Length: 314
Ligand SMILES: [Zn+2]
Image 1 (spheres, rainbow, N blue to C red):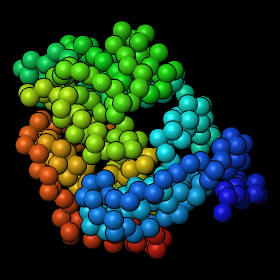
Image 2: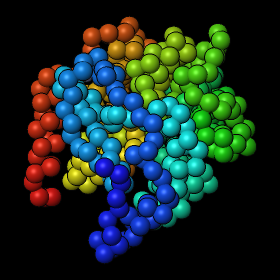
Image 3: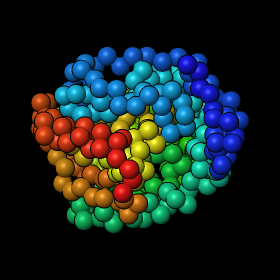
Image 4: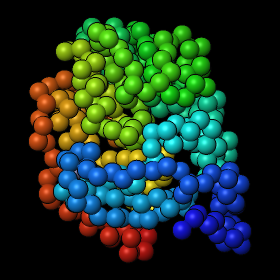
C-alpha cells in the first residue's frame, strides 16, 4: 500500500504535512530482501513493525537467533545514495520542524565531540597514536576536535560531498566515498572512529572486518550506536524508534558480538550524555567468530518489545 499521510486534522504539529510536502516516494524506491542476518547468518526473522517514524511502509525485522534488528526489505545501495544526496537532511528537518543541514548539525557535533573526547582520553595517553581515520565523518567536526585534542592527523571518509567539503576546510584529509568501495592500499591507521555512523551502514560485519584490516596492531577503535532499547523506551514506541535512514538497530549485546566477531576487544562502554548513544573504545584482538548475544538476552529483548507495544506509557 502506498504511503498515505494522515489528513491535516490528525496532524496537529504539521509533521505529516511537512513530510508529505517533500514528495519522497519511499514505496517506489528499489529495495532488496535481506536473506541472512548480518550478525549470525540465520534466516529466521520476526517482523516487529510495518511502518517507520515518518509513516513510510518500512518493516523492521529481528533475527530470532541473535536479536539483531534491521529494515527488511531495505533500499539498494544506489537508492540509499540518492536518499543521502538531497532527501535525508530535508526529511529529518521536516520530522523535527526545524532546519537541519551540513551547517546546523555542526553545533550538535561539536558538543558531542567534546563529551566523547573525555571518554576516549584515558586510552589515548601514552598510546603513541599519530593517525586517525573517521569513517562516515560528515563535516569533520568530530575528527577535527579529536585531532586537536590528541595531536592526530585526521582523515575523513564520507559519501556526502557537501559535508566532505566542510571537513576539507577544517584542514582534514578527505575522501568522498564509502569505506566499502575505497582502496587504501597498504595504508594503516593508528586510530579509527565510527561516530553516529554504524546504524547507517548496509553491511556492519563487512565494514568492521575491513576496519580490523585497516587498524594498526596497537590501534584504538571508537564506535558508537543509537541504542535501540533506549530509542523505543524513551518514545515508548517501537515504530517511532525505526527510521529508513537506519538499516540497523543495535543493542549492547548485538554490538558487542559484532565487535568480538571482527576481532575487537571492548575496553570500555559508555552511555552518552544524551542517554541515547552507547560508545565503545576497543583494541584489536583475536576474532571470536562464534560470538553471539546470550539466548536470555535475545528473549528479554522480545519480551520488552511486546511490553512496550502493549502497555500504556508509564
Ligand atoms: Zn542473527
